[in-house]
Picture 1 (cartoon, one colour):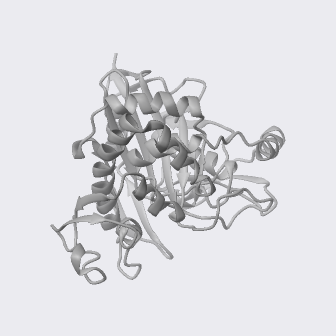
Picture 2 (cartoon, rainbow, N blue to C red):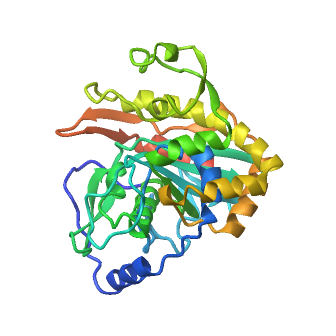
Length: 356
């Protein structure tokens, strides 16, 4: 995990091969329309409605206690005098929900793209037959990559996790950079990603015919009297967007209340999604394909089908939803969240590793 003690940027310049590789990747998109489906799995698992990230990945460079590269150095680690091995039977999917509404597509100019409002890692464990979700605060201060407007890689510096998507091309580069930032923060490798934006929310909700939740807080009670804390409501096109995304920008740390609502939604959504996957997988696939303008993913159709089969078998409850602990700080421009490094390392070990 990276150290966030300093707000100063540290720049690692990667020119030459990475730059050319990114250019190549930008023009050779491997997004399959089918991938949308897998997205839903991830979405449901990870709060897909929250985050829309579009960065392209190329380099995998992670920190896990000591600096390691992603060729496998993260697979065995030592923590508090015990040795741990990475669980090879898990599949990890990054889900992000973006704060934009326009169709998602890469552009020639970099920077000023959408921000990831929500970021989650979905963990599917084939052996234990369970799903876990690690929800990350978008205000987490960590290393992210940035570029000049023309796409020249300027290395990494410490800023908000949600901006890891913003500096890229709004396409694959953005998605990959968000993925890289999460990998660095956690010290692991992530298998797949799915990114959606606000325009997908009602479609995602409609896939399961609306979602019934118990409202966890009073954040929306002034706007929607029916959404007071403790109320049981079925969310539809009229209120689902605000339920998942609204926060009081004048109040400090209002993102916390939003994360609570997203957690309540995702927990209920997963059960409904599993039912549809079991009963109407082909129809669901077609409906997801219609969301392609608002979805970016590395998941192919084959991968989607294998993940769908796995999702049908796994269990998921409120207790399988995790959030790193840390400290909120009022930054100059935006709230800042600093993770408790030791607690995060322990959480990563609990979720991704097994004792040797």
